[in-house]
Amino acid sequence: MNKNKLNIILAIVGSVAILTIGGLVLNQINKNHQANQLIIEKCFDNFDKEGEVVITKDGFWSPVRCEKK
Image 1 (tube, rainbow, N blue to C red):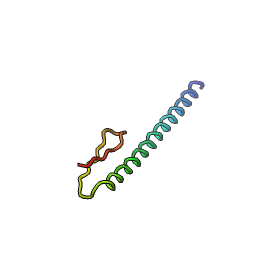
Image 2: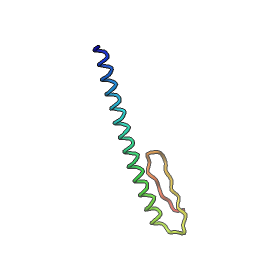
Image 3: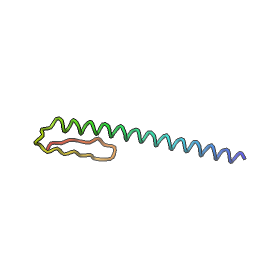
Image 4: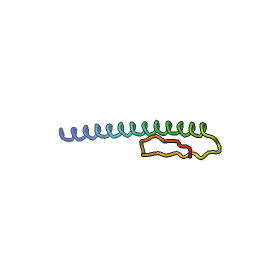
C-alpha cells in the first residue's frame, strides 16, 4: 500500500513538472513569435518599396534578421 502511494505521488509530481515545462516553452515560443513579427513589420516599413528585402533566421530560438539586398 505504501509503495503504491509513493508511485502515485511520483507520477503526479512528474506530470506537473512536464506540464509546467511545456507551458513555459510554449510561452517562450509565443514571445519569440511576437518579437519576430514586430521585427519583420519594422523591416518592411523602414526599407524602400523598390528594394529587395531578405529575412533570415539562424536557428529555432534566434530572432529574425532583416537585410536589404
